[in-house]
Image (tube, rainbow, N blue to C red; front, side, top):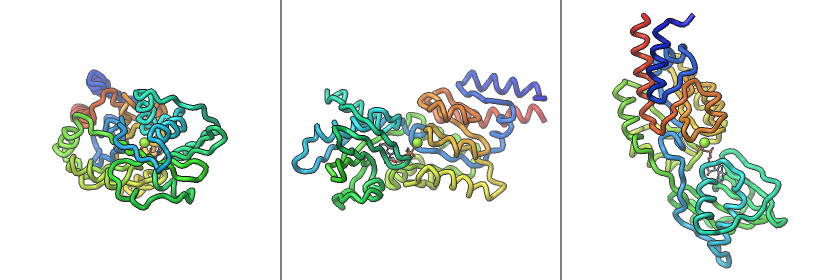
Amino acid sequence: SIPLSYFGGIGAASRQGILFKGGNYLDAISRINTVVFDKTGTLTRGEFDVQTCVPQPGISGERLIQLAASAEQDSTHPLAAGLIRYAQTHRISLLSISNVEEMAGCGIQATLDNQTVLVGNIHLLERESIAYPSALHEVKGTIVACAVNGQYIGYLTLTDTLKADARQAINELKELNIKKIQILSGDKQSIVTTFAQQLSIEQAYGDLLPEAKVKHIENLKQDNTCRIAFVGDGINDAPALALSHVGIAMGEWGSDAAIETADVVIQTDQPSRIATAIRTGRQTRRIVW
Ligand code: ADP
Ligand code: MG
């Protein structure tokens, strides 16, 4: 049976947009000493804006955007949404595609006018043995490169921004004596490091494939004094959410899969609600015992 005060805790939390899926998670969150964030859509807005468009000679910028956005039109990835929004605002029409194959942590492939269009990061170009200018390694911002029939045709850069209360969210966790605060991301290490520095988070891990994020949580769990809350939003976060002691989904932009797997759902766009959830758990525990 669940002690009565847990209902009080759940109610208090829900009035602040924090959904606990059971009283046991109030107890579990009160014992958390490690908070691991998946960067995109949790600490950052998850809304990418196109910053630059760098086509190869002979290709127009418009054509590069058209091909990349067209290939991405069925994807739910935040980068895809950014490209499509950009194409729409610039009245660039999307062409019909088939045989779409999305590759987690890399990008997407689609057939368009009998041509194979690949859109994604440098790892994808490497994996598909596509030759590209080495200057791509120097580029700031998240790269979305494009190749047609195995031939590189250019790249775009997109950038995301921190959520309004991301800094406060981290400060409040530190005030609650959360020992370890980490960011994980499939995005480039340099970008993850930059965001982490802005938030005074020392442990920032980029270039992680979805499997590597899970492995990271598994490794943390080797230390059985480590009580982990994982905060995610994306579809491919579900395994890490399930594996951590408390899986927290940021719900406003969250995918259904993440919300289903999570133990706690933050229904506002405020990562500072994670600290609120921990405080509620600790207060409730004090009342129960
Ligand atoms: P995260 O959720 O940590 O941002 P993902 O695993 O979703 O990471 O993606 C990691 C990287 O893989 C992205 O930063 C991007 O470079 C690339 N990527 C994944 N999906 C796509 C896509 N649909 N289009 C372009 N790039 C993608
Ligand atoms: Mg993700």
